[in-house]
Image (cartoon, rainbow, N blue to C red; front, top):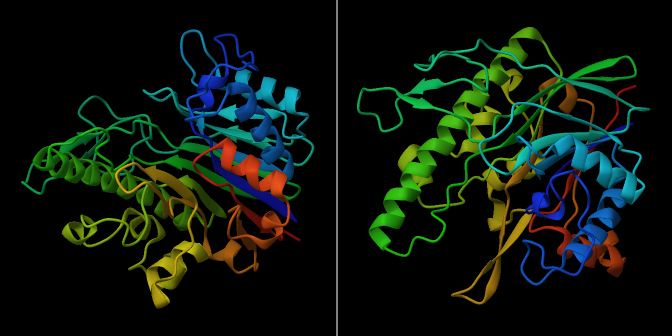
Length: 344
């Protein structure tokens, strides 16, 4: 049995110094009302509880001229006593949030293995490498614009025993117009962000098709910043980004599968799971959203894997463990998602 996880850790970067050292102190973290010591301690509890062979860390610490996501995460793993002590990263993002894969080297091997052709400044329309430029007509005016990932997906070649897998870790563009109060500006920026998010998902789907064409066992996992029916702008474009990546209109043998996405798409009785919660100040309440997914190619989905959202209020086993439930709430505004995949 192979267990994989995806976990978006809110501002993980703020918990480390430039040398990758942990800031275990009483100064505030980037999470409201949480100290750096408290967030690190909570993260240690959660990472240990996951017991995953590999964890796709979304919003991993920054990599730049001074900082290193791998250095920070391996220091965290040693401090927290994790068996997931090896780390691989890919193309550096333009933000302070990277995508990294923290894994147990006794169970897996993993290497960055990007596909696609490098494209020049003008880009290309079909399947460029994720650190390149995609040409796509965002506003449907007949002119293709250059699209770049702010956080290039992490493409991995993974070996687990005799099994070879392809993993793509993703953190798609956020659709929210953060901090914008003018209603007209909010709508304009929201639509522009929605177009960008969809373009990134279309680019990702191009890569999915490459793997399906090659007969690869594929897992796409991470934060798509999207879910079926999540906002009013979906009606303007016909599909959510999640549906695009999954291939909702494709034949069954070309679709990726995630049961939580499938539940949201069917929308029976209006029920849908959530993987994140955010505080809405005007309403003085939390808002839940389905943003984090583990999508499988048909060959892996046929193995009857088990998905789990580590939601501290919805999962009975977590509810029965108050310390773990509190740690999950303290660690991030997202909840981990795991999959147990039979490979024998």
